[in-house]
Every structure is written in C-alpha cells, then in structure tokens.
Image (cartoon, rainbow, N blue to C red; front, side, top):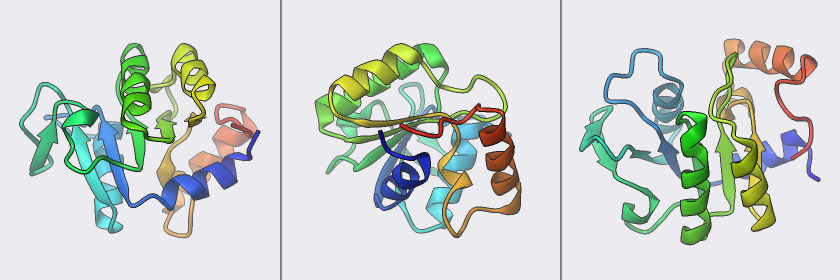
Length: 158
C-alpha cells in the first residue's frame, strides 16, 4: 500500500490527464472544476464526455481511446456507476494512474472499479480530489482535505 500523499504526488507528476464526466453545463460540477484548474496549472488536460463535442471551450472526446497520444492519468468524475467503464478503458489504454473524485458527497467512487483497477496493477485513488494536494492547492481544498481525512472520507492508503 502507498500513502495517499505519495500516490497524489505521483498522480500530479503526470502531465497528460483525462477528466471523465466533464459536463456541457458546468456550473459547479466537480469534473469541470478539476478540469479547469488542472488546465490553469499547465497540465495538458482532455475532457471526456461521450455526449458532447465540446466542453469548457475545448474539444471533448468520447472515450480514452479517442485521445490522440493517450494520457498518463485519469480523473474519474462521473457518477459511480460509470467508474467501472472508465477503469476498464484505462486498463485497455495502459494508463496506470486513476483518481476517482469524491468531494463531500459519494462522488465517483465505485468499489468494484477500485478492485478491478488494483487487480490490474493500477494505482487507484478512491476518494478526494487531485486539487487537495500539492503546493498549488487552494485554501478551500486544503481545508476539505484535512476534514475528509479526519472523517475517513479520503483513504489514507491506496
């Protein structure tokens, strides 16, 4: 097992990151928040939404296989019932880092998807948000991280 802090650091070392579940109508949708912030931080991000041609002003891809050149990591920000499909795609595409987004609600975490990914050697972070970690984490995300860690809504080991 790896500490969440170490796994988060490895995940954030990835430069090409897909975010599944980025919405056409963003408002405060978690996937869109992650997508925008990673883009602002200089990551090469790819929006994955099979029902949209464009989101956040960028081209959207139907699935991970459609992204030219592939990706190093995936943030799953879909409903939990779609997480298994995203993990299967990650396995097929040779992606080794998957983060199932979870804020204060149930988020995108699916135990079956977590199990499958880990069985195939993926590092699966099953909770929290990549924006909660690293030197560029904003105050709100840092506070949320501490609270969710204390209440065990974020795993301490992955």
